[in-house]
Length: 183
Image (cartoon, rainbow, N blue to C red; front, side, top):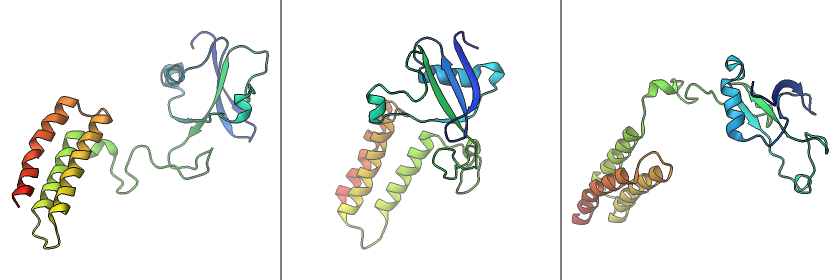
């Protein structure tokens, strides 16, 4: 265990079990909390947790829910969330962590990556643009094109593709736009 930090199970004010992390001096950071839970005590605390943040007026006025006024350091209560049970905070059913709740396939077995998803989105856009549907207008075809371009921009903003890759895919998609303009 890191020096000056203690982990213990206890009941909170609602009689729910929480994992209390206490640091004798200084503030706990999210990175430090994650590191402790994932690697300390032979990975005994690995799992899914929720943290309640006190951002109320009482906290803004200097009030504290966890520590006495004269105590130095920091403390946080972590609510453990179990897969497929009810959330201890909101009471809602938690989705599965390992498999898709819709089809039941393990997430790791789906072998979906960003490139496959982008290729599937482009294929769908092209299929819809080339559709012989008489109700499909030029504006409708352009909407499919711009939806694909928007997906590329979002993938870049999320950091799952590089700017160079986004530009390359955008340049490749120009042939779709030219096809729409030719009619």
